[in-house]
Structure formats: C-alpha cells, structure tokens
Length: 230
Image (cartoon, rainbow, N blue to C red; front, side):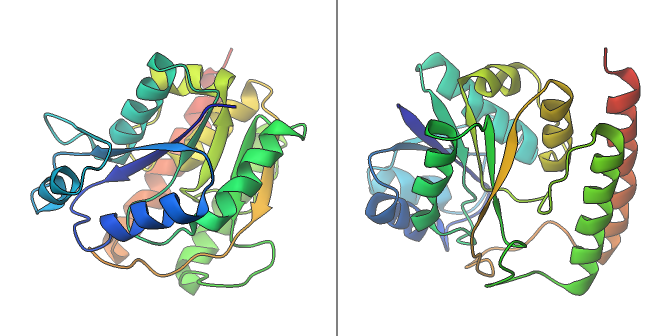
C-alpha cells in the first residue's frame, strides 16, 4: 500500500528534524509531508535547508485545518493510507508499521495508537487522563464504540476515511470528533498499543484554563455531531 505520514507542525523548530529522522529510520517504506501551519519560528527554514518534504500554509489554520490539509494532500496524490504523527517528538515511529498492519491485514478502517492499553511510557497528567476518560465514555454513549485514547494524535486511516476527512474535519481539538464522525459512518476502529514521550520541544497549546474550554467545547461538539447525524 502507498502510505503517507502527515506531520502537522506549528513552531516545532526544536523537534521537527528529529521527528523526521525517526520516521526515516524506523517507519519503513513510507512517504511523509510536514504541514507547516504558518509557523513564526525557524521551522520552515529548517525544513527548507534540510530538504524535507513539506507544505507551508499561507495562514494559520490550527491543528484541524493543518491535518485536513494533509488529508487533502493524501487524497490528491493517491495514497491508500494516511497516518497522523505529531511534530513535537511525542510519538515514536517504530509503531507505524503496527498501525499499517492493522489496516492491511486486519478488519480495521482506522487504527489509533493508544498509550492506555499497556499503560507504559508517558501517560499525561492525572487531570488530562480524567478528561480523556470522560470523553471516551461520552463517545461510547453516543455511538457504542469504545476507544480509550480518544485524544491520541497518532492514527492511521484507509482510503475511505482519507476521502471523508479531506472534505470534512473538525477544526478545533479535532481528534475525539474525528472518531465519532467515523464511528457513526460504520468505521471499524482498533487501538494499537504504543508508548509516548513528553513533547521534545515547543509549548503545548493546552493550559489549565484552556483545558476547561476544551472539555466544554468538545463535549458539546460531540453531542451536536450525534444529534445532527443522518
């Protein structure tokens, strides 16, 4: 299968080259594209000077818009599988072949890299884990599908969902909504055990105040998505 790694990046100059090196060394025979979301630091210069494969957006679209741009790239270039992979160094490329095998050999349409199956590696803070658990329960109540790591930014999708996400993708904190949207359309979703690291550079956009906004916004978005689904 023809596989593309989508790496959304905003001000990731401290980690982006290491992320690319990890993919080149450990992901197997795959392509990648960095979606530079109008970074204001030296991210684009580093990508250009090191011959990286990247697309620079003309304005900042946020994580949802950046990932959707990657899915559009995958659709337009005929990829069979697209894999989201954060540019901050949290993910390990050695797990990418496991995600691909879940789509290639198993019954899955979507494979999510989950840190909560073996509970090894970086597990995030207790507060964030509680929020993730709440969203997991809400998604299960809304569609009957249980996913433990609903906020994981490491996930693989097949051609069907490349097509869907390239035209419709949540723009603000999109990962839980993307799971619900797919589940309501009959996606077969599996979780693959992975270990994650703390971010290797840059600054997270989620602080305690934004965590409250995140929970309210995402919960309402999930409920509205289910209520309006036909």
